[in-house]
Amino acid sequence: MPYMKHLFLLLLILPAITKAQRRDYYAAGDSCLKLKDYACAVANFQKQLDGDPESNGTAFMLAKSWAMAGDKDQTFKALDLYVKNNALNNNPFFSAQLIKDKTFDFIKDDARWKNMIASVQKSRYKNTVPNISDVVRVQF
Image (cartoon, rainbow, N blue to C red; front, side, top):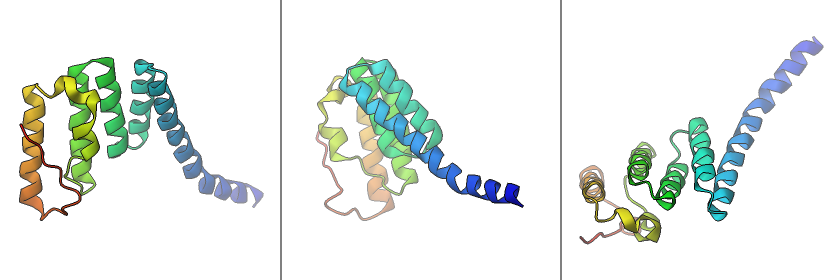
């Protein structure tokens, strides 16, 4: 019987341990960004996404890490995940933070950026009537 009691306790705390570990990856990625260690940031945010693949905040930070590292292709790959995760979380809108963040300026003349923005705007108007505080107007 004591065995069952220990097993039960283990099953209760295991999710909390796993969640805390994922939080550590996010915090580590954030610390790496502050130190401008972009490879470290990418690795930690990717580990965070491995545990929580639908997190739009982590996908955003992964994209930002790749952008700071200067890798356009990986930045777009992470931004695609960000857009997908926003849709999965019933939030099809780009955040003002993404549009205004200077980190992404180096990709804003790329056709993929313009296509991504246009696609998000099209789905925004197709799916719902947006809350005015959530909408960000983008001018080309």
